[in-house]
Image (cartoon, rainbow, N blue to C red; front, top):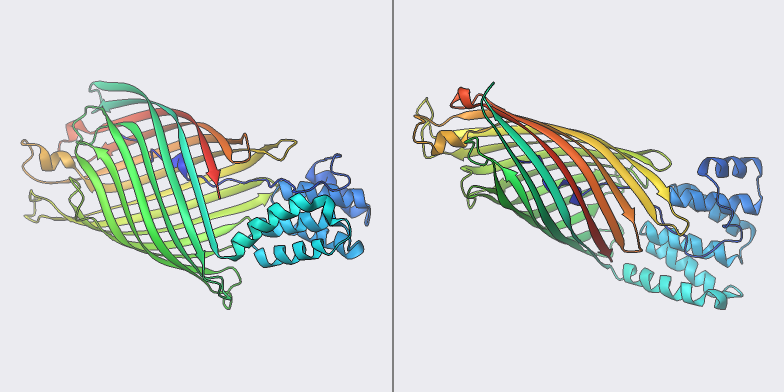
Length: 444
């Protein structure tokens, strides 16, 4: 038995609060977003109320509210450098570099800008890099993981239980080239390498063993904006390659093409649909030759600091085995579907703007897969397929401990069943407890 996704924690949707670049006059009197909103409505025009609301809105991802409030402050007091620079910072965060640059230029024409010279210089350098159209993002992670897996053979058969404590590490990154078009078209080069240890029963023989769990992917994508249809609609078309080891001499090597359509209903919300086709001919021990993938994911901020996410994905394989099925054919089709949902919550914002986010979720999968015992066992007269069913719950935390450093930790529990195998008496089920903790360094 193996985890549904050993490296799930490396690509988690999370909310993030942005620290204010400069101090507005009344920021020391920080209050909750709800109270700040009430004051903003009831005390129209009061500067302290506006300042507090800007900070709370930005920390909780309500960028549209923060921007409109800052614009109101600038309209009333055009020479307010604190508000002007906070406005430029938020526009930079949402990648509107031209607007951010315009506000910085206006700041340099405002009396007293010398008092903010360092802040202006640092932000201007970042904005200019964004305007040049080249952005590089990277993340390096390392930590440790604990796994406790128990597998049961048949209704009353023997149990096999194993524990594993091991390190894990990863490096992932993307280079984004802005093509400087009106529709903000991009070319992206991305990839990731991951390493860990895991427990599994790759040959379906009822015996757990530890193996090196390696995975990686790379992709090149052309991303085109389609604002004439919907303002935030994008179409991504690209090629990819991926590999992953499953133990027992089995590994995936896949190359293919994929199309992704995405739209952002709000700044912090996104919906994606993807369709891909890959070739698996260089894989070992999997016997699948081609694979089609499809999926739909969505993330929606439903309240300040709270977001929900959901996904559904599926695949369909075509393959050939070295041993015939009962109908005399050597060809087979495998398929599966997974659904999942999660809730992310901004648990705490520290005084200096660092954030603590936690996420809880569940996922369920059902597959019709090749029974590898039927292909490799001398006692099996024919190749056969089997049913695999699995579910998992998890609770993860991400704490920003420095500007570019995050502490991540979490726990999970999952169960798996393998039924309708070539030898029904050895159908099996299992459960896995897991925990992990590590550090991630991110930089642009």
